[in-house]
Amino acid sequence: MDMTGEYRIEAPRDKVWAALNDPEVLKESIPGCEELTKESDTAFSAKVKAKVGPVSAKFAGRVELTDMNPPESYRISGEGQGGVAGFAKGGANVRLEEDGAATVLHYEVQANVGGKLAQIGSRLIDSTAKKMAGQFFEKFTQTVEGQG
Image (cartoon, rainbow, N blue to C red; front, top):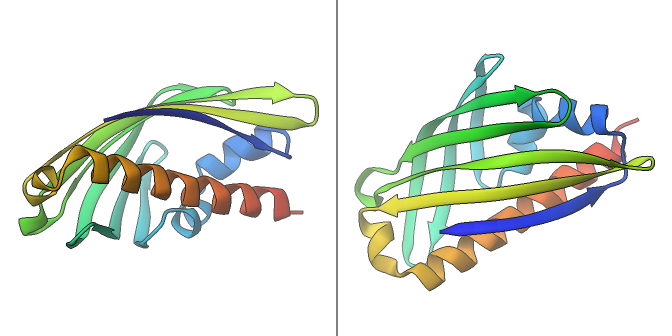
């Protein structure tokens, strides 16, 4: 599954960059996130509860940030295991572009799923992924714009 998009955030690029690297902001923004732990400057572990069609699962996984170019871009890669539900793994290129006093966040996501999740069908997986991405960016934008 591939997905691209962009979001305009009414905040300076440095502030958006800091939020993208803040475990508390990310935990609040990720739908179903129960736990997010910063293991190093470039690695996080997470526990996320997700429902895709009839399949509900808790995923435990790890995320790494690479190709860091602060405050402009990075690549985020991760993999999560959901027990009998299967697994999800993938990555995203994230780029922040200044637009006056605001920031435009561009993203390109590539993801794969396996196990029961893969049997559900790509259309349902794609729509769920788009919905979760929308929820993440809506909450992330509200949080960043609301910070003083």
